[in-house]
Amino acid sequence: METKIVMETYPVQMKTFTKTAVSLNSIEKLIEYFISKIDADPMASHIATFDHYAHTKDNNGEISPDILGAQNIIFCFGPKLIQPVAVGLRPRSIGIVDLGDKLQVNFMSPPAAPIREKMTTWVEEIL
Image (cartoon, one colour):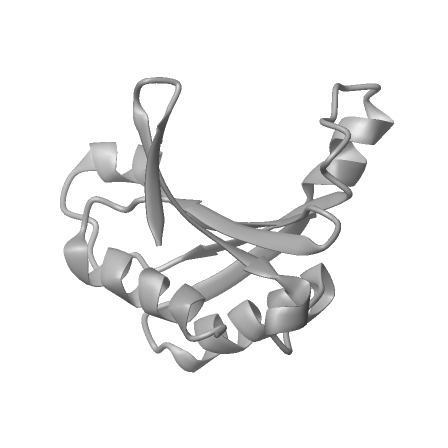
């Protein structure tokens, strides 16, 4: 996975796949895959799926021409809640972007190493 600092602040983990290289070759298939991973994890809860592309288009927002679709799976691990500020860091989101012949999966890097490793493993298991 590649790490990119976005807007000089946010560490984002990302992996781009050629659609012909993976069997999970659509946003819909990847959403099903990630929801199955979330549902199988006793500490995780699936909250919602958000169609970021449709939302932006419906609001006459700007969309890069290379982006053909974009959705987020929103979920939370929340293994502990020991300080109020933690609420502002949750829930988690995995973004899936259709780039035509490629798909990109990305997420903001969680501060907790075990959670980051789990999410990274989920993405790398796509191959």
